[in-house]
Length: 110
Image (tube, rainbow, N blue to C red; front, side, top):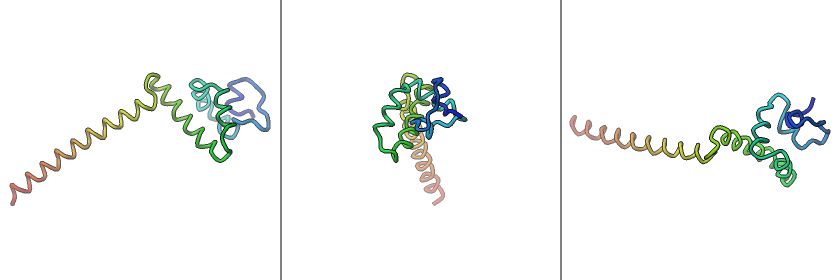
């Protein structure tokens, strides 16, 4: 059966299809987002330019970036990273407050 890429692009999936190892037929959304964000031709060129052992990681990265871009068309991955940085800052503030309260409680019971 054709890979998700060839199925979406409505073409015959050749034996040496560059997409087949990374976009299985049972995960059509994976390629659909990557195609929407990067374009099939660009993805094909990127994969061909990489050594075989790096292609899996490259596809994982493209899938992550494409999903982030679909969720947040303006900021993509940067939006997710920024939100996590804000969350870290808030948690660090909460931790500092809790530590200060803990010190005050210890001093009261001393």
